[in-house]
Image 1 (cartoon, helix red, strand yellow):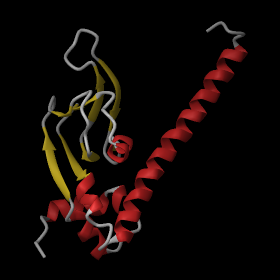
Image 2 (image 1 turned 120 degrees about the vertical axis):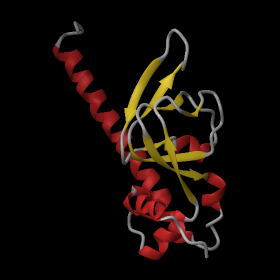
Image 3 (image 1 turned 135 degrees about the horizontal axis):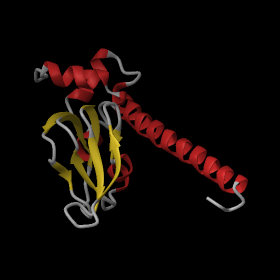
Image 4 (image 1 turned 90 degrees about the horizontal axis):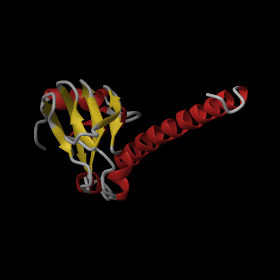
Length: 163
């Protein structure tokens, strides 16, 4: 077995991707991840491309940007350490809706779909833990959106449509 870089192992252990994994399982997961350093402005994935990578932010911030480099460029959201990026596209292989750009210096764990799939037969529990972490993130986003939609509806109703 290859020796893992200590910073990769530590970043993996601290990531939500490793929730519930033993030390040996964390090492297996780290073996299919790579730790990438980004400078402000680096584009990790452009809008409109198919990207088979999941990104877990270790430190720094990443921005999801629509119409990157155009007059109508818009930052949709800025994500921070602990957040996952592109988890649904990672799973379904659809084109990216927006670009992923480093807003600040950042380090990210990068998981390629094929590398995760390589664990299906040999480490199914590690794969299962990663899938649960991705689903927990999706569930959290869905819950937050439902709460915000209810708050917006309540605001509009209380204002009698005048907002």
